[in-house]
Amino acid sequence: MTINNKATILLLHGSKDPSWMEPFLTLKAQVMARNPHVRIASACLQFGSPTLDEAIRTLFAEGIRKFVVIPVFISTRGHVAKDVPALVEKSKKMFPGIDIITSQAIGEFPAVQQAIVDGIAAIASEQDL
Image (cartoon, rainbow, N blue to C red; front, side, top):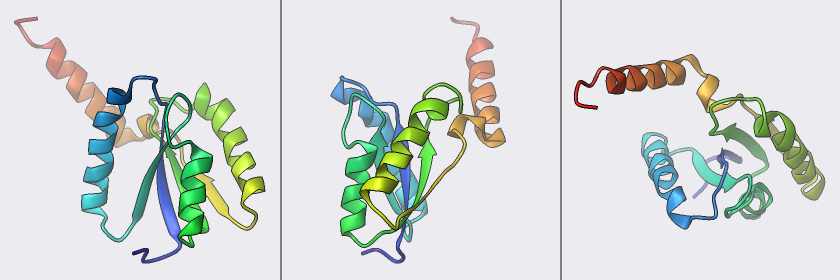
């Protein structure tokens, strides 16, 4: 049941290998567990399903009209700078009246950057590598 008409979509790169999605599905489940009142969906930029359009179509059918797209990428450059805005514009044309906000890439949030640094530093300091 949707509490409001807003959804958060985790936008992933995608892969031809179906097992590639497993850690992201776990991530999505953990986000949903911490935010049970928020509708969380996932979509793939390429090589996976659902696409952003497919995810929005499903959510639109549920009555959702506001979307926050979070690119689960390290950087806002590349795909996020070039491809994501085009996909968002395409979705806006397909579903008139929807509102879509795209956040910066998750990897550019300071807390995420710090977690990555901590993880790399921990691995780098391992003596048994």
